[in-house]
Length: 57
Image (cartoon, rainbow, N blue to C red; front, side):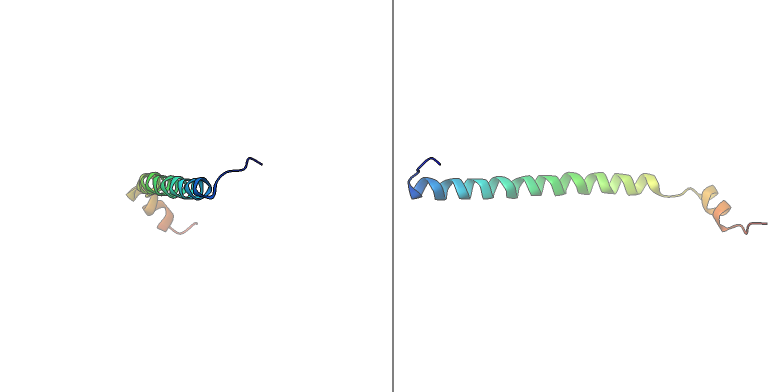
């Protein structure tokens, strides 16, 4: 391992934490937008609902 002064070690830990936090925030915003679009496109049309409600004879 490379020996670093404690000041640099703390700066590195804080930097990694900030990067991971921002990555999670970006991921959740993108995933939220994709999830909303996916749910909107998966809604059944009226014809599909009519066919699904009919009894099978």
